[in-house]
Image (cartoon, rainbow, N blue to C red; front, top):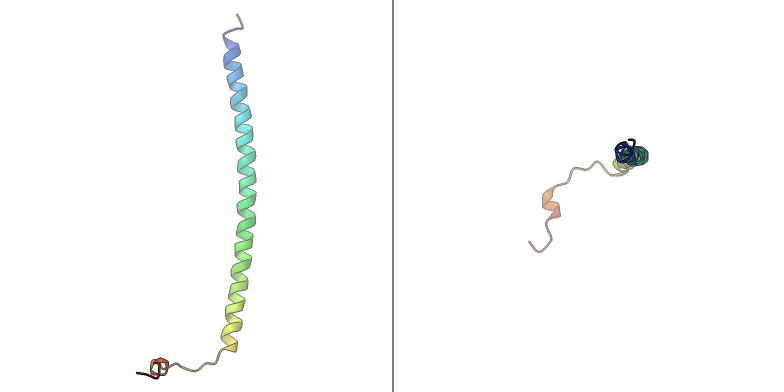
Amino acid sequence: MNRPAAPMENRLHELEAKLSFAEDLIDTLNRSVFRQQQQLDSMQQQLRLLHQQLQTLMPKEERDLRDEIPPHY
């Protein structure tokens, strides 16, 4: 009499195992995405600082495009 329930019970255990693996995978991926976002934020901040440093080091002269024309023109 318990025979018909056995395949259903096996299927339920398989689904529970798959769900458990999927939850672990999602958790691992979430941690990876979080770490990558932290790295991106850090690199963006470094880039902003480098840009600011570059702006302070560059002369504030206005460029004239005529100065950029090669001499043969």
